[in-house]
Image (tube, rainbow, N blue to C red):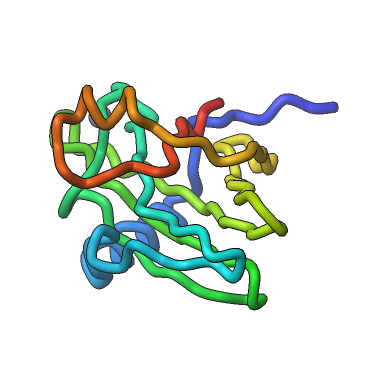
Length: 140
Ligand SMILES: [Zn+2]
């Protein structure tokens, strides 16, 4: 397996992400979404790939799609308030009978997945009313 340089995003791709960021809605306006199993997804929380700061609120923008009845995909770009770096994420929420699986593409192009869990701890840390049902670092 050859090594890839994970920090080098093609310039055209980066421009497209920035254009999307400028054109799209803050992601928090699009949530919560209800999946076919009745469970809700309250939003996502993104971590800046460069400095590790949390990106949320109006700094996180994107769009949702439902390619299948039980799948919601999220394409989002977050502009870090601390370092101005743009972090892109593709993820999707897949409903099973009684749980929700979150899958996301890491910066290396690989897909990762895990069962979604509640985030009471993060909710306390963030100290907001809004609940972050899914939290992931794209570098994971
Ligand atoms: Zn940053």
